Length: 308
Image 1 (cartoon, rainbow, N blue to C red):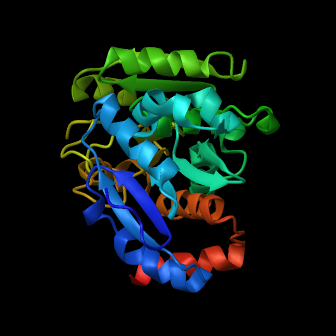
Image 2: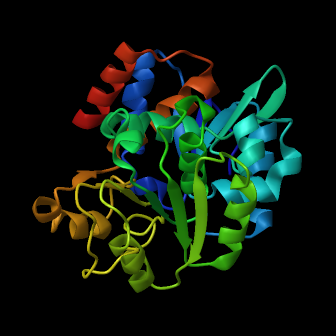
């Protein structure tokens, strides 16, 4: 990594060069009046701790490196670099993850923005009082930062009885499940949390088939974007009148295509990851550059991104 010569905002991911944000950010910067450029930092999935620490130490000490958005590596980067941060926000402390790095008042700060951005994206397509009226469940495929953030969003006490009766998190590896269970323990007594080890997609098919109608099924695995494939097979059978959310917006999106094959028969509402993309980035940009992005500007930025 080279010393920044102009204010620079970073995207820490796996294949950042293929992301739409590399084209979108310069147009957003112009619309927001920001004098900054973006650079991607690619790291392999579950990179060695030393690689995360090298990146984070550079960002902390390089004067014109203003901050970063972290995707895919949220949990691993936090675990590897926790001692480097001068401040961690409450969501970050609770979830043990970081999606945003910023600098303010001489402090290098870590934030977990996903409970906010995932909640804003969910509110676009989940009807008001959906859980209280229908009694459905949530199945989160993957035990990474996005699933933990969504769980924290759903478990907020402000929702009262309008929460899913059960949230199941299924994952291919057991250590991530154990970590998720520890992070989410005691969040909300109204919600039953269940953690299932499913090393093969056939196990996820069985979980989906057993869900009641009016449930929400989310692909939060990264499959279909960071790696090819889907956490389900072509034989998956969805419950009637349910919501299916593919939180990716690019890639082969096989999970979404499998759901689309049943959309009419099962009366499914199928959502991609576009709104999650918009809210995720704008929440981080607002934090890093210490600006407010109101609803009017959000609509403008969404339009700019769509055209780009």
